[in-house]
Structures are given as C-alpha cells and as structure tokens.
Length: 133
Image (cartoon, helix red, strand yellow):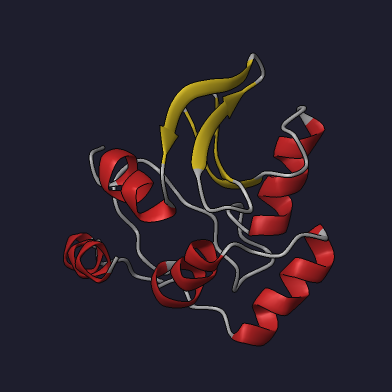
C-alpha cells in the first residue's frame, strides 16, 4: 500500500485548483449519508490520497460535496442504475463502476452485472487499473 501511495503521489498532476483531503468527520458524515461503513482501504485512500489527479480515471472524493466525484453522489447514481447496494463505487469508467465490497475486494460493475475482473484489494485496483491508464 505505501509503495503504491508513494508512486501515486509522484504521478499526481499539478493543477491550478488542488483537491482537498477530507477529515475523519467528513467520512463519518458520508457513512451516515450512504448508510454503509467504508472499508479500511477506501477510508485510507480518501484520507491520504483522494487529492491525487492522474490519468483518465477519477476516483471518488469526500471533501467537497459539490464535486462530481463526491462519494455520496457517485453512489446514488450507481445504485440508481442497479449496482447492488452492498457495494460502494470507487470510480466510474468504461460504462460502469469499479466498486468495493465490505471485505475490501474490488469488482467492476456495469448495467450487465458484475464482471469477472476482480482485485483482492483497493490498492491492487489502483495499480492495475487507475495507474495503468
């Protein structure tokens, strides 16, 4: 995890208006809003790396409720499209959503249902998908 976080920081693009990192209180509010506890890896990502901008995939964020990547907004959209409620979306791309289960495993969901490409944890998804694009 630390290695991937470090590499993401190095890859991060400089932008004129930087994203902010959320606080623990922000995450508690999000959990109350979506009615699901955030898996540990997603919580760490949101607190430590959700300000990173890299490539064509935009993972969810938690600090700015007006952002199109704000987790509750992305979750509401994904769930309204039929993604099972026990999954939390982490990024929208390729016509679907990468989503994380309570056990930390990541899958890709599209309106056709869950696809077979699964990652054992959030950080492997970061390396294999987000950082690879």
